[in-house]
Length: 299
Image 1 (cartoon, rainbow, N blue to C red):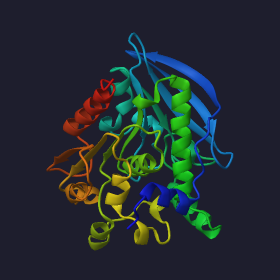
Image 2 (tube, rainbow, N blue to C red):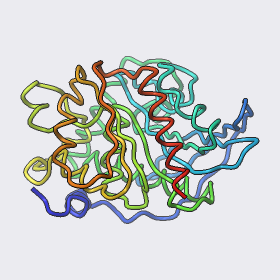
Image 3 (cartoon, rainbow, N blue to C red):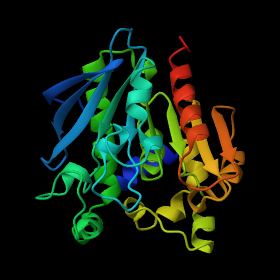
Image 4 (cartoon, rainbow, N blue to C red):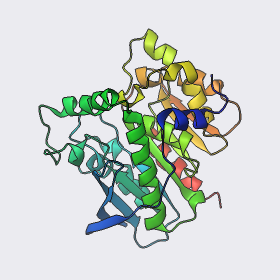
């Protein structure tokens, strides 16, 4: 077990220090209570990272959050699901938060939606899963790690959000469900600029996932990682920054989230546990939105 999980992760991954980011602005659309703009910035490997930026209209911008999307085996959905254009309506965090005064950056994760190489948009492709698998395996062959790439992308997203919003960094954080929840968990652990984190459907011990034969995210395929840290160590690394952990008793991806949280010292975690499965519902969606908005009131 590491005594400094953040440092352990950064050193193990060879994760670079966050840097200021240039970005390009694209088309802007207006909706009830917010504007949506497509922006693009460059990744570690020179790859373009497209994202949607949601900005409140008709009211002050109180704070900002990067919302990392799920994948749900649907690699053709990324930022557009967070935007509410496609997929599960209980993943449409960007419009709900923007109408409440929170700016939202919703980037595509590598190999999803518009980051699938020659295939872009929100229509599925036969090789979507293979592209995601290759993003891990090709890096392992080179002695690199998908987690390094994903967390470097996350740091860049937060840098862009800081710059484009111009907000006090105390009111800028990260959130996500499922695959997005794992991203938010590790990102908040390694990037102290992330001042709050909401992690949904993504807190479960390595032991429980192994025992129940639950799949790991491909970016967690870091040789020797489990010898150094476990999920409660990663969660503890976020302290004392406010953190929300959302889980379901029937969700294999957060089966023992309550036990993991119980192993973490301090009172920085707000826990919501429901007797339901993995997919979000109105109760959890609304609670996540309210909790994030409440972080903006901590002034």
